[in-house]
Every structure is written in C-alpha cells, then in structure tokens.
Length: 175
Ligand SMILES: [Zn+2]
Image 1 (spheres, rainbow, N blue to C red):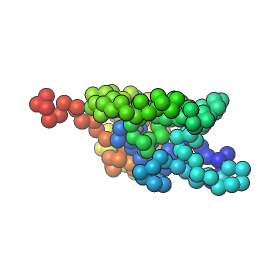
Image 2: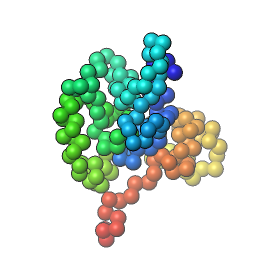
Image 3: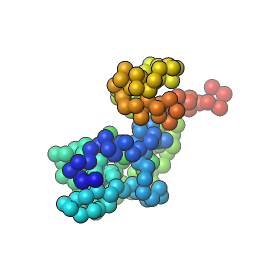
C-alpha cells in the first residue's frame, strides 16, 4: 500500500485487543518478537516502517517526526506490539529506556483496570451497547448499524475478543 493512502483505520484493521491497555490496538503481523513494522510504498520504493512512527504521523500530522536517535516515538503501554494512538508520544531515548525499565506501573492490576476503563469510556460503543451485542440474536449487520461500529468490531465483541468483562483486581484475594 502507498503511504499516502494509509489511514489509521487501515492500521487498526490489523490489530486485536491489547492485553495491557485494553484498546483494540495490538498490531498483528511481522515478527511477533520485534517491534511492529508495516510494508508500504514510499515515493515508489517498498519500505518497512515502524508502525508506531506511522501512527504518530497519522495522529499528529502537524508535528515533525523525531529523528529516531536522540528522540524516539514510544508508548506508555507496556505491550511492545501496542500502537494505541492515544498512548503514543515522543520521548528522549534515555527517558524511553527508563520507562521501559520501570515495571510495576502496568503490572499493577488496579492501575491497569483504571486505564482500561478510561480507554473504554472514550469508545463510541458504550457498555450497554456491548451487552446488547452479546445478548441479542439479531444479525451482525443490524447491530453494526445500530451502534455505528464496523461488522468486524461487532463480531469481535461477540466472540469476546474485544471488550472482555473486567475482572476485579481483588478477585481471588477474598474480597
Ligand atoms: Zn496497549
């Protein structure tokens, strides 16, 4: 695909739900151990670009991309495959390293739950819409048009791949 035709929606189409931030922004494809990359045509040449840099550019078209050496595009989501546009930001390389090393922020279940709730609150599909999709026997097309989301999204919600019910962080602790 040509870089000029690439939109955020094209990238989100290739994502599943992120296990850390809860947004449907875990990029699938490429080397699962490496940073997510995407093959695009830039000025007639096929190139492999870092998806987070592409997302940053699409999310903030007026800002210039950092050089990638001193200043890098990073994410406050701990999942290295996550390309959540709302969590992507620029940091100095040393800040990015410190953040990556600062475990605990995202492994803390209470903090994680709070983030997932905040991300879901911004979704155009409210929680009662999720319940409707899961409980209804209507077709995917009917539900997609009722809630203004894509048929793929409806089917992922039905399968429980997106918008999984949130477990209490205190479950299993006797609370
Ligand atoms: Zn994430």
